[in-house]
Length: 436
Image 1 (cartoon, rainbow, N blue to C red):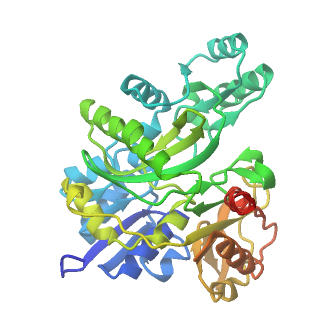
Image 2: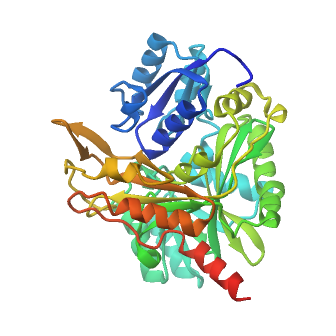
């Protein structure tokens, strides 16, 4: 760190993303006291945990006021949308993350699409509806495939890809009438289906300047071969070969820069992590969605490669000084395989004992990030849909994949489910390039 004084940091959140960020800050050594609210069983091994829900805005502000951290890292989407950063700033507490107005880039997809469209950012053509009958009439009138999205926050599961008019109408019905995603479905965004390969980019922003991290690729569908309903993410890897230097430059010039300018013009300059979900099409990269925070599980493969000091980067983002720092990363590759509860992303049972974690963590290049875990009667148990992220770091993607799955073999809990084809696109690209 450029400063000698170590900082006290409070991380708001409880998943694998938060564990990965806590692990990074602890490993880099710039933190004096590390706290989390509420945290999980893994985070508790390296930080003090406080039983305050991320969405308990009053409770989080009170906790920060009492514990007096030098910086609060607000990681999840819900407290950002509810204005936790605004409240912390008003109380004189330094917070890393966008204000509620800037976080609308994720919390209000209709707002985000209109902002991008007006700024000339390449994204799918769309229409937004708050009336389910009008939405159904619209999907009946179009001849192309559509994606139906809940406009609000839906834990990464609010997008339904359809292949027919009947499926599109059913998706509208599920979101707006059956309320599958709750209030997130008060409004839907219906957009043209884009052909291509998806990838994720993360930019740390200070309202005007930004710095990019390594690219990643998430695996949303629950089953191998990208089948089944979307989840919060069943695995990821970095870097994503589909994000070439040309794609990266286009994403900067055509997407990130005009988006930051548009948000500033709206009166809500963007400070924090901007997640850009890309579709790499024949016409170049287009935006699938933007999020106002680190993605999960992508964070679990991005941060292990980061060499730059994360505390320094966050401080620079808050102070508008990102032009004075750089993002430096290790070469190599990372893979995370998510171990999920049986039934996820639907109904699932909690409280199953988890075994083999210690043995898995001993494997070369392996880091375990807890997502939905807890301690019960002296045993580590499942406490969520996504339970553990088994991350592996190696010189190349094939080795990282092998290490991750060998570690997975040591872990067990009742109903444990995971995809067995994480990073299949990257490996296929490697195989194809070898044959040429």
